[in-house]
Amino acid sequence: MPTQHTRRAVLGAALAVAGTGALAACSDGGSGHGGAHSPGGARDSGRYVSPGGKEVEAAEAARGSGPVREVSLTATRARLDLGGGRTVASWAYGDRLPGREVRVTAGDTLALTLANHLPEPTSLHWHGLALRNDMDGVPGLTQRDIAPGGDFAYRFAVPHPGTYWFHPHSGVQQDRGLYAPLIVEDPKEPLAYDKEWVVVLDDWVDGVDGSTPDAVLDELSGGMGGGMDHGAHTMSGAGEDEPGGDGPSRMMMGATSELLGGDAGDVAYPHYLVNGRVPEDPESFTARPGDRIRLRIINAGGDTAFRVALGGHRMTVTHTDGFPVRHTTGDALLLGMGERYDVLVTAGDGVFPLTALAEGKKASALALLRTGSGAAPAASVRPKELDGKPVEAGRLVPDPSVALSGRAPDRTIRMRLTGGMAKYDWAFDGRPYSAKQRRPVETGERVRVVFDNGTAMWHPLHLHGHTFALAGNAAGARKDTAIVLPHRSLTVEFDADNPGLWMVHCHNVYHAEAGMMTVIGYRG
Ligand code: C2O
Ligand code: CU
Image (cartoon, rainbow, N blue to C red; front, side):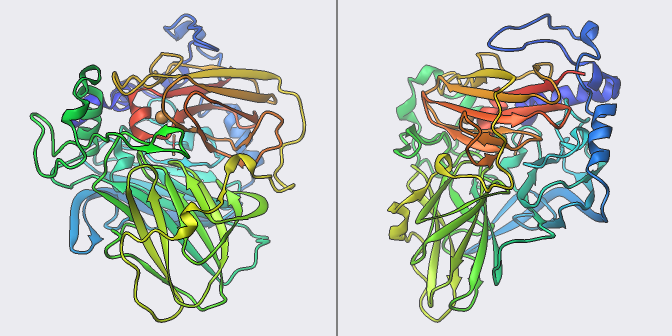
Protein backbone atom coordinates (compact mmCIF):
# COMPACT_ATOMS: atom_id res chain seq x y z
CA MET A 1 0.00 0.00 0.00
CA PRO A 2 2.69 2.59 0.71
CA THR A 3 4.14 2.10 -2.74
CA GLN A 4 1.01 2.61 -4.79
CA HIS A 5 1.68 6.30 -5.32
CA THR A 6 5.40 6.21 -5.80
CA ARG A 7 5.51 6.35 -9.54
CA ARG A 8 9.19 7.15 -9.33
CA ALA A 9 9.72 3.83 -7.60
CA VAL A 10 7.76 2.05 -10.34
CA LEU A 11 9.82 3.71 -13.06
CA GLY A 12 12.97 2.91 -11.19
CA ALA A 13 12.04 -0.73 -10.97
CA ALA A 14 11.47 -0.84 -14.72
CA LEU A 15 14.89 0.69 -15.27
CA ALA A 16 16.49 -1.78 -12.93
CA VAL A 17 15.24 -4.49 -15.26
CA ALA A 18 16.13 -2.67 -18.46
CA GLY A 19 19.59 -1.67 -17.34
CA THR A 20 21.39 1.63 -17.64
CA GLY A 21 20.94 1.81 -21.41
CA ALA A 22 17.36 2.84 -20.75
CA LEU A 23 18.54 5.95 -18.95
CA ALA A 24 20.07 7.29 -22.14
CA ALA A 25 17.11 6.22 -24.24
CA CYS A 26 14.27 7.92 -22.41
CA SER A 27 14.31 11.16 -24.31
CA ASP A 28 11.21 12.04 -26.23
CA GLY A 29 9.88 15.51 -26.81
CA GLY A 30 7.28 17.32 -24.79
CA SER A 31 8.88 20.71 -25.13
CA GLY A 32 7.37 24.05 -24.46
CA HIS A 33 3.89 24.98 -23.44
CA GLY A 34 1.74 21.91 -23.56
CA GLY A 35 3.27 20.75 -26.82
CA ALA A 36 3.82 17.04 -26.47
CA HIS A 37 5.94 15.61 -29.25
CA SER A 38 6.03 11.96 -30.18
CA PRO A 39 6.27 10.05 -26.95
CA GLY A 40 7.88 6.67 -27.28
CA GLY A 41 11.48 7.47 -27.07
CA ALA A 42 13.58 5.08 -29.00
CA ARG A 43 13.96 6.98 -32.24
CA ASP A 44 14.85 10.14 -30.30
CA SER A 45 17.62 8.30 -28.55
CA GLY A 46 20.75 10.37 -28.31
CA ARG A 47 19.10 13.74 -28.89
CA TYR A 48 19.69 14.62 -25.26
CA VAL A 49 22.79 14.42 -23.13
CA SER A 50 22.65 11.28 -21.04
CA PRO A 51 23.37 11.58 -17.29
CA GLY A 52 26.63 9.66 -17.55
CA GLY A 53 27.54 10.95 -21.02
CA LYS A 54 30.78 12.47 -22.24
CA GLU A 55 29.50 16.04 -21.84
CA VAL A 56 28.85 15.28 -18.15
CA GLU A 57 32.32 13.77 -17.77
CA ALA A 58 33.86 16.86 -19.39
CA ALA A 59 31.96 19.27 -17.12
CA GLU A 60 33.10 17.24 -14.11
CA ALA A 61 36.74 17.23 -15.24
CA ALA A 62 36.60 21.02 -15.47
CA ARG A 63 35.63 21.19 -11.78
CA GLY A 64 39.00 19.69 -10.81
CA SER A 65 39.56 17.05 -8.18
CA GLY A 66 40.36 18.15 -4.64
CA PRO A 67 40.89 16.00 -1.55
CA VAL A 68 38.48 13.10 -1.25
CA ARG A 69 36.10 13.15 1.72
CA GLU A 70 34.69 9.73 2.48
CA VAL A 71 31.40 9.32 4.29
CA SER A 72 29.20 6.31 4.83
CA LEU A 73 25.57 6.69 5.55
CA THR A 74 22.79 4.23 6.26
CA ALA A 75 19.13 4.86 5.55
CA THR A 76 17.31 2.78 8.12
CA ARG A 77 14.22 2.35 10.23
CA ALA A 78 14.82 4.15 13.49
CA ARG A 79 13.08 5.15 16.68
CA LEU A 80 13.60 8.89 16.97
CA ASP A 81 13.46 10.94 20.12
CA LEU A 82 11.70 14.25 19.41
CA GLY A 83 12.13 15.43 22.99
CA GLY A 84 9.59 15.90 25.75
CA GLY A 85 9.15 12.15 26.05
CA ARG A 86 7.93 11.78 22.47
CA THR A 87 9.48 9.07 20.38
CA VAL A 88 8.38 7.96 16.94
CA ALA A 89 9.13 5.04 14.66
CA SER A 90 10.39 6.45 11.39
CA TRP A 91 13.08 6.23 8.73
CA ALA A 92 16.27 8.21 9.13
CA TYR A 93 19.95 8.47 8.28
CA GLY A 94 21.33 6.58 11.25
CA ASP A 95 19.44 7.01 14.49
CA ARG A 96 19.29 10.78 14.73
CA LEU A 97 17.20 13.65 13.45
CA PRO A 98 18.30 15.55 11.43
CA GLY A 99 20.90 13.17 10.05
CA ARG A 100 24.49 14.00 10.95
CA GLU A 101 25.64 16.97 8.91
CA VAL A 102 28.13 16.39 6.13
CA ARG A 103 30.74 19.14 6.08
CA VAL A 104 33.22 19.55 3.24
CA THR A 105 35.16 22.38 1.61
CA ALA A 106 34.44 23.71 -1.87
CA GLY A 107 36.74 21.94 -4.30
CA ASP A 108 36.68 18.66 -2.35
CA THR A 109 35.52 15.44 -3.88
CA LEU A 110 32.73 13.97 -1.81
CA ALA A 111 32.60 10.16 -1.79
CA LEU A 112 29.50 9.10 0.11
CA THR A 113 28.21 5.58 0.11
CA LEU A 114 24.58 5.18 1.03
CA ALA A 115 23.47 1.77 2.30
CA ASN A 116 19.76 1.15 2.01
CA HIS A 117 18.41 -0.71 5.03
CA LEU A 118 14.87 0.49 4.36
CA PRO A 119 12.07 -1.80 3.23
CA GLU A 120 11.67 0.28 0.03
CA PRO A 121 13.97 1.50 -2.74
CA THR A 122 15.56 4.85 -2.01
CA SER A 123 17.90 7.48 -3.49
CA LEU A 124 19.80 10.54 -2.35
CA HIS A 125 19.57 14.00 -3.90
CA TRP A 126 22.00 16.85 -3.15
CA HIS A 127 19.69 19.84 -2.98
CA GLY A 128 21.16 22.93 -4.61
CA LEU A 129 24.48 21.53 -5.78
CA ALA A 130 25.68 22.07 -9.34
CA LEU A 131 27.13 18.59 -9.46
CA ARG A 132 27.60 16.00 -12.18
CA ASN A 133 24.26 14.86 -13.47
CA ASP A 134 24.62 11.12 -12.82
CA MET A 135 25.17 11.85 -9.08
CA ASP A 136 22.02 13.99 -8.76
CA GLY A 137 20.06 11.13 -7.23
CA VAL A 138 16.81 11.04 -9.20
CA PRO A 139 15.73 7.43 -9.75
CA GLY A 140 14.27 6.77 -13.17
CA LEU A 141 16.10 9.80 -14.58
CA THR A 142 19.73 10.01 -13.45
CA GLN A 143 20.23 6.68 -11.70
CA ARG A 144 18.57 3.43 -10.81
CA ASP A 145 16.75 2.87 -7.55
CA ILE A 146 18.89 1.79 -4.65
CA ALA A 147 17.11 -1.45 -3.78
CA PRO A 148 16.51 -2.56 -0.19
CA GLY A 149 19.75 -4.17 0.96
CA GLY A 150 21.68 -2.40 -1.80
CA ASP A 151 23.97 0.59 -1.78
CA PHE A 152 25.16 3.39 -4.05
CA ALA A 153 28.49 5.19 -4.11
CA TYR A 154 28.01 8.90 -4.79
CA ARG A 155 31.23 10.59 -5.85
CA PHE A 156 31.53 14.10 -7.25
CA ALA A 157 33.40 17.38 -7.08
CA VAL A 158 31.71 19.93 -4.81
CA PRO A 159 31.70 23.20 -6.73
CA HIS A 160 30.35 26.00 -4.54
CA PRO A 161 30.50 26.92 -0.86
CA GLY A 162 27.26 27.36 1.02
CA THR A 163 24.40 25.85 2.96
CA TYR A 164 22.82 22.83 1.27
CA TRP A 165 21.06 19.67 2.35
CA PHE A 166 20.25 16.21 1.12
CA HIS A 167 17.19 14.00 1.04
CA PRO A 168 15.75 11.09 -0.97
CA HIS A 169 14.10 11.68 -4.34
CA SER A 170 11.86 8.65 -3.94
CA GLY A 171 8.15 9.07 -3.34
CA VAL A 172 7.40 11.05 -0.19
CA GLN A 173 10.33 9.62 1.81
CA GLN A 174 11.65 13.14 2.40
CA ASP A 175 8.72 13.70 4.78
CA ARG A 176 10.06 10.99 7.06
CA GLY A 177 13.32 11.59 8.94
CA LEU A 178 15.51 11.25 5.86
CA TYR A 179 17.25 14.61 5.66
CA ALA A 180 20.52 16.20 6.80
CA PRO A 181 22.50 19.41 6.25
CA LEU A 182 25.35 19.58 3.77
CA ILE A 183 27.65 22.47 4.68
CA VAL A 184 30.26 23.45 2.12
CA GLU A 185 32.90 25.67 3.64
CA ASP A 186 34.56 28.43 1.69
CA PRO A 187 38.36 28.07 1.63
CA LYS A 188 38.44 31.88 1.49
CA GLU A 189 35.59 32.58 3.90
CA PRO A 190 34.95 36.33 3.77
CA LEU A 191 32.66 36.48 6.82
CA ALA A 192 34.00 36.85 10.34
CA TYR A 193 31.97 35.19 13.09
CA ASP A 194 32.51 33.47 16.43
CA LYS A 195 30.03 30.63 16.24
CA GLU A 196 27.94 28.79 13.75
CA TRP A 197 24.49 27.34 14.35
CA VAL A 198 22.87 25.06 11.80
CA VAL A 199 19.09 25.27 12.16
CA VAL A 200 16.96 22.69 10.37
CA LEU A 201 13.20 23.23 10.31
CA ASP A 202 10.68 20.46 9.73
CA ASP A 203 7.03 19.55 9.89
CA TRP A 204 6.46 16.12 11.41
CA VAL A 205 3.77 13.48 10.96
CA ASP A 206 5.57 10.15 10.52
CA GLY A 207 4.86 7.58 13.19
CA VAL A 208 2.42 9.77 15.13
CA ASP A 209 -0.80 7.81 15.88
CA GLY A 210 -0.10 5.51 12.95
CA SER A 211 0.39 8.22 10.32
CA THR A 212 2.90 7.93 7.51
CA PRO A 213 3.62 10.34 4.65
CA ASP A 214 2.31 7.71 2.22
CA ALA A 215 -1.00 7.59 4.07
CA VAL A 216 -1.12 11.40 4.03
CA LEU A 217 -0.63 11.39 0.26
CA ASP A 218 -3.37 8.78 -0.06
CA GLU A 219 -5.73 10.94 1.93
CA LEU A 220 -4.87 14.09 -0.03
CA SER A 221 -5.23 12.46 -3.41
CA GLY A 222 -8.32 10.45 -2.71
CA GLY A 223 -10.06 11.82 0.30
CA MET A 224 -11.74 14.97 -0.93
CA GLY A 225 -14.24 13.80 -3.50
CA GLY A 226 -14.45 17.10 -5.30
CA GLY A 227 -14.32 19.14 -2.16
CA MET A 228 -17.71 18.23 -0.76
CA ASP A 229 -16.34 16.74 2.39
CA HIS A 230 -14.16 19.66 3.42
CA GLY A 231 -16.03 20.00 6.67
CA ALA A 232 -15.68 16.34 7.51
CA HIS A 233 -11.95 16.67 7.97
CA THR A 234 -10.74 18.79 10.79
CA MET A 235 -7.42 19.55 12.34
CA SER A 236 -8.44 18.02 15.63
CA GLY A 237 -9.16 14.44 14.64
CA ALA A 238 -6.73 13.14 17.25
CA GLY A 239 -6.82 9.42 17.52
CA GLU A 240 -9.81 8.70 15.27
CA ASP A 241 -8.84 6.50 12.42
CA GLU A 242 -10.04 7.25 8.92
CA PRO A 243 -11.66 4.15 7.52
CA GLY A 244 -9.06 2.36 5.46
CA GLY A 245 -6.43 4.97 6.25
CA ASP A 246 -3.37 4.91 8.46
CA GLY A 247 -3.88 7.20 11.41
CA PRO A 248 -6.18 10.18 11.88
CA SER A 249 -6.95 12.71 9.17
CA ARG A 250 -4.06 15.04 8.45
CA MET A 251 -5.92 17.18 5.95
CA MET A 252 -5.36 20.88 6.59
CA MET A 253 -8.42 23.06 6.38
CA GLY A 254 -8.54 26.82 6.24
CA ALA A 255 -4.84 27.54 6.68
CA THR A 256 -4.38 31.01 5.26
CA SER A 257 -1.47 33.38 5.12
CA GLU A 258 -1.19 36.87 3.79
CA LEU A 259 2.50 36.36 3.06
CA LEU A 260 1.70 33.30 0.98
CA GLY A 261 -1.20 34.93 -0.81
CA GLY A 262 -3.94 32.70 0.62
CA ASP A 263 -4.03 28.95 1.21
CA ALA A 264 -0.92 28.12 3.21
CA GLY A 265 -0.75 24.34 3.06
CA ASP A 266 -2.41 20.95 2.66
CA VAL A 267 -1.22 19.03 5.70
CA ALA A 268 -1.96 19.60 9.39
CA TYR A 269 1.13 18.23 11.07
CA PRO A 270 1.00 17.20 14.72
CA HIS A 271 4.52 18.58 15.33
CA TYR A 272 6.85 21.28 14.06
CA LEU A 273 10.52 20.82 14.82
CA VAL A 274 13.79 22.70 15.01
CA ASN A 275 16.74 20.33 14.81
CA GLY A 276 14.48 17.38 15.49
CA ARG A 277 12.98 18.73 18.72
CA VAL A 278 9.43 19.67 19.67
CA PRO A 279 9.02 23.20 21.11
CA GLU A 280 8.23 21.90 24.61
CA ASP A 281 11.79 20.50 24.82
CA PRO A 282 13.86 22.73 22.54
CA GLU A 283 17.50 22.65 21.60
CA SER A 284 19.55 25.28 23.41
CA PHE A 285 22.44 26.93 21.60
CA THR A 286 24.97 28.41 23.98
CA ALA A 287 27.06 31.48 23.21
CA ARG A 288 28.45 34.54 24.94
CA PRO A 289 26.88 37.99 24.90
CA GLY A 290 28.35 39.92 21.99
CA ASP A 291 29.24 36.80 19.97
CA ARG A 292 28.65 37.07 16.27
CA ILE A 293 26.75 33.96 15.28
CA ARG A 294 26.20 32.67 11.78
CA LEU A 295 22.90 30.83 11.51
CA ARG A 296 22.41 28.50 8.58
CA ILE A 297 18.67 27.96 8.36
CA ILE A 298 17.24 25.16 6.21
CA ASN A 299 13.56 24.40 5.61
CA ALA A 300 13.42 20.60 5.31
CA GLY A 301 9.63 20.53 5.63
CA GLY A 302 7.24 18.68 3.35
CA ASP A 303 4.33 21.12 3.21
CA THR A 304 5.12 24.06 5.51
CA ALA A 305 6.59 27.50 4.95
CA PHE A 306 8.26 28.83 8.08
CA ARG A 307 8.45 32.43 9.21
CA VAL A 308 11.54 32.73 11.40
CA ALA A 309 12.62 35.36 13.93
CA LEU A 310 15.04 35.52 16.85
CA GLY A 311 13.49 37.38 19.78
CA GLY A 312 15.38 40.52 20.74
CA HIS A 313 17.56 40.48 17.63
CA ARG A 314 17.63 41.63 14.06
CA MET A 315 19.12 39.33 11.45
CA THR A 316 21.51 40.25 8.67
CA VAL A 317 21.03 38.02 5.65
CA THR A 318 24.35 37.15 4.01
CA HIS A 319 23.36 34.23 1.75
CA THR A 320 20.33 32.55 0.35
CA ASP A 321 20.41 29.01 -1.05
CA GLY A 322 24.17 28.95 -0.52
CA PHE A 323 24.97 32.05 -2.61
CA PRO A 324 26.00 35.43 -1.16
CA VAL A 325 23.83 38.53 -1.28
CA ARG A 326 24.42 42.14 -0.37
CA HIS A 327 23.98 42.13 3.40
CA THR A 328 20.39 42.97 4.23
CA THR A 329 19.03 43.38 7.74
CA GLY A 330 15.49 42.65 8.83
CA ASP A 331 13.38 41.16 11.59
CA ALA A 332 12.02 38.00 10.02
CA LEU A 333 12.51 35.54 7.17
CA LEU A 334 10.10 33.43 5.17
CA LEU A 335 11.38 30.07 3.97
CA GLY A 336 9.50 27.84 1.59
CA MET A 337 10.36 24.14 1.58
CA GLY A 338 13.91 23.64 0.29
CA GLU A 339 14.99 27.26 0.81
CA ARG A 340 17.97 28.26 2.97
CA TYR A 341 19.11 31.52 4.51
CA ASP A 342 22.40 32.32 6.23
CA VAL A 343 22.18 35.21 8.67
CA LEU A 344 24.49 36.93 11.12
CA VAL A 345 23.32 38.05 14.53
CA THR A 346 25.14 39.69 17.41
CA ALA A 347 24.01 37.90 20.54
CA GLY A 348 22.38 39.84 23.35
CA ASP A 349 22.56 38.82 27.00
CA GLY A 350 19.90 36.38 28.18
CA VAL A 351 17.72 33.59 26.82
CA PHE A 352 16.10 34.22 23.43
CA PRO A 353 13.55 32.28 21.41
CA LEU A 354 14.30 31.34 17.83
CA THR A 355 10.74 30.78 16.68
CA ALA A 356 9.78 29.19 13.38
CA LEU A 357 6.14 29.93 12.79
CA ALA A 358 4.42 27.34 10.61
CA GLU A 359 3.09 30.04 8.29
CA GLY A 360 -0.70 30.09 8.25
CA LYS A 361 -0.95 26.92 10.33
CA LYS A 362 -1.31 28.39 13.83
CA ALA A 363 1.63 26.46 15.27
CA SER A 364 5.33 26.97 15.71
CA ALA A 365 8.66 25.35 16.33
CA LEU A 366 11.29 26.61 18.74
CA ALA A 367 14.95 26.60 19.66
CA LEU A 368 16.74 28.75 22.24
CA LEU A 369 19.77 30.99 22.13
CA ARG A 370 21.28 31.10 25.61
CA THR A 371 23.99 33.58 26.54
CA GLY A 372 23.02 34.23 30.14
CA SER A 373 20.71 33.07 32.85
CA GLY A 374 16.99 33.29 32.74
CA ALA A 375 13.92 31.17 32.32
CA ALA A 376 13.09 29.65 28.96
CA PRO A 377 10.12 31.24 27.20
CA ALA A 378 6.93 29.25 26.71
CA ALA A 379 6.90 26.73 23.86
CA SER A 380 4.35 28.82 21.97
CA VAL A 381 6.23 32.13 22.33
CA ARG A 382 5.78 34.53 19.40
CA PRO A 383 8.56 37.14 19.45
CA LYS A 384 7.35 40.49 18.11
CA GLU A 385 10.04 40.38 15.40
CA LEU A 386 7.87 37.81 13.57
CA ASP A 387 5.59 40.71 12.65
CA GLY A 388 8.43 43.11 11.93
CA LYS A 389 10.11 43.79 8.63
CA PRO A 390 10.61 40.57 6.65
CA VAL A 391 13.59 40.20 4.36
CA GLU A 392 12.05 39.42 0.97
CA ALA A 393 13.85 37.14 -1.45
CA GLY A 394 12.69 39.16 -4.42
CA ARG A 395 14.34 42.31 -3.09
CA LEU A 396 17.72 40.80 -2.32
CA VAL A 397 20.66 41.93 -4.42
CA PRO A 398 23.31 39.38 -5.35
CA ASP A 399 26.86 39.81 -4.19
CA PRO A 400 28.81 41.06 -7.23
CA SER A 401 30.93 37.89 -7.18
CA VAL A 402 27.91 35.79 -8.11
CA ALA A 403 25.67 38.20 -10.07
CA LEU A 404 24.72 36.89 -13.50
CA SER A 405 26.11 39.02 -16.29
CA GLY A 406 23.61 41.18 -18.12
CA ARG A 407 22.68 39.22 -21.24
CA ALA A 408 19.56 38.72 -23.28
CA PRO A 409 18.04 35.27 -22.90
CA ASP A 410 18.60 32.89 -25.80
CA ARG A 411 15.56 30.88 -24.89
CA THR A 412 12.44 31.31 -22.82
CA ILE A 413 10.69 28.31 -21.32
CA ARG A 414 7.18 28.89 -20.08
CA MET A 415 5.65 26.57 -17.56
CA ARG A 416 2.14 26.93 -16.33
CA LEU A 417 1.49 25.57 -12.86
CA THR A 418 -1.82 23.72 -12.86
CA GLY A 419 -4.03 21.64 -10.62
CA GLY A 420 -5.76 22.02 -7.30
CA MET A 421 -6.78 20.50 -4.03
CA ALA A 422 -10.04 18.95 -5.18
CA LYS A 423 -8.50 16.49 -7.61
CA TYR A 424 -5.01 16.77 -6.19
CA ASP A 425 -3.78 16.92 -9.76
CA TRP A 426 -0.79 19.26 -9.36
CA ALA A 427 1.24 19.44 -12.57
CA PHE A 428 3.01 21.61 -15.10
CA ASP A 429 0.86 22.44 -18.12
CA GLY A 430 -1.78 19.97 -17.03
CA ARG A 431 0.49 17.00 -17.60
CA PRO A 432 1.64 15.00 -14.60
CA TYR A 433 5.32 14.09 -14.40
CA SER A 434 6.81 11.41 -16.53
CA ALA A 435 10.55 10.76 -16.60
CA LYS A 436 10.33 11.04 -20.40
CA GLN A 437 9.41 14.71 -20.42
CA ARG A 438 12.03 17.08 -21.78
CA ARG A 439 12.08 20.88 -21.89
CA PRO A 440 15.07 21.36 -24.17
CA VAL A 441 18.00 23.73 -23.67
CA GLU A 442 21.39 23.93 -25.37
CA THR A 443 24.73 24.19 -23.61
CA GLY A 444 25.90 27.80 -23.43
CA GLU A 445 22.48 29.39 -23.57
CA ARG A 446 21.12 31.96 -21.16
CA VAL A 447 17.77 30.42 -20.33
CA ARG A 448 14.80 32.33 -18.98
CA VAL A 449 12.08 30.34 -17.25
CA VAL A 450 8.68 31.89 -16.63
CA PHE A 451 6.60 30.04 -14.05
CA ASP A 452 3.04 31.09 -14.48
CA ASN A 453 1.01 30.05 -11.45
CA GLY A 454 -2.50 29.24 -12.59
CA THR A 455 -3.39 27.68 -9.26
CA ALA A 456 -4.89 29.01 -6.05
CA MET A 457 -1.84 28.02 -4.02
CA TRP A 458 1.76 29.13 -3.58
CA HIS A 459 4.53 26.76 -4.66
CA PRO A 460 8.27 26.67 -3.85
CA LEU A 461 9.85 25.91 -7.22
CA HIS A 462 13.19 24.15 -7.38
CA LEU A 463 15.62 23.58 -10.24
CA HIS A 464 18.29 20.92 -9.91
CA GLY A 465 21.93 21.38 -10.85
CA HIS A 466 21.85 25.19 -11.28
CA THR A 467 21.44 28.34 -9.24
CA PHE A 468 19.19 30.71 -11.14
CA ALA A 469 18.89 34.48 -10.78
CA LEU A 470 15.57 35.90 -9.66
CA ALA A 471 13.85 38.51 -11.79
CA GLY A 472 13.77 38.94 -15.52
CA ASN A 473 16.80 41.16 -15.84
CA ALA A 474 19.23 38.79 -14.14
CA ALA A 475 19.69 41.42 -11.42
CA GLY A 476 18.16 39.32 -8.67
CA ALA A 477 19.70 37.11 -6.03
CA ARG A 478 20.93 33.68 -7.00
CA LYS A 479 18.72 30.90 -5.68
CA ASP A 480 17.74 27.32 -6.45
CA THR A 481 14.32 27.38 -4.81
CA ALA A 482 11.86 30.26 -4.95
CA ILE A 483 8.28 30.91 -3.99
CA VAL A 484 5.65 31.74 -6.58
CA LEU A 485 2.43 33.13 -5.15
CA PRO A 486 -1.05 32.09 -6.32
CA HIS A 487 -2.05 33.52 -9.72
CA ARG A 488 1.29 35.27 -10.04
CA SER A 489 4.29 34.52 -12.13
CA LEU A 490 7.96 34.14 -11.32
CA THR A 491 10.75 34.73 -13.83
CA VAL A 492 14.20 33.26 -13.31
CA GLU A 493 17.29 33.00 -15.50
CA PHE A 494 20.21 30.62 -15.55
CA ASP A 495 23.23 29.86 -17.66
CA ALA A 496 23.05 26.40 -19.19
CA ASP A 497 26.51 25.29 -18.10
CA ASN A 498 25.87 21.92 -16.48
CA PRO A 499 24.84 19.36 -19.10
CA GLY A 500 22.37 16.63 -18.21
CA LEU A 501 18.74 15.95 -17.39
CA TRP A 502 17.57 18.12 -14.53
CA MET A 503 14.39 18.08 -12.52
CA VAL A 504 12.26 21.17 -12.07
CA HIS A 505 9.59 20.71 -9.45
CA CYS A 506 7.51 22.06 -6.66
CA HIS A 507 9.26 21.35 -3.35
CA ASN A 508 5.97 20.61 -1.66
CA VAL A 509 6.67 16.88 -1.51
CA TYR A 510 2.96 16.05 -1.94
CA HIS A 511 2.53 18.36 -4.93
CA ALA A 512 5.69 16.93 -6.50
CA GLU A 513 4.58 13.36 -6.00
CA ALA A 514 1.11 14.17 -7.35
CA GLY A 515 2.80 15.30 -10.58
CA MET A 516 4.20 18.85 -10.33
CA MET A 517 7.62 17.90 -11.67
CA THR A 518 9.23 18.00 -15.10
CA VAL A 519 12.66 17.78 -16.71
CA ILE A 520 14.94 20.27 -18.39
CA GLY A 521 17.12 18.37 -20.85
CA TYR A 522 20.32 19.50 -22.52
CA ARG A 523 20.39 18.57 -26.18
CA GLY A 524 23.33 16.37 -27.05
CU1 C2O B 1 15.29 19.15 -2.64
CU2 C2O B 1 14.32 17.67 -6.37
O1 C2O B 1 14.79 18.39 -4.48
CU1 CU C 1 3.32 23.01 -5.04
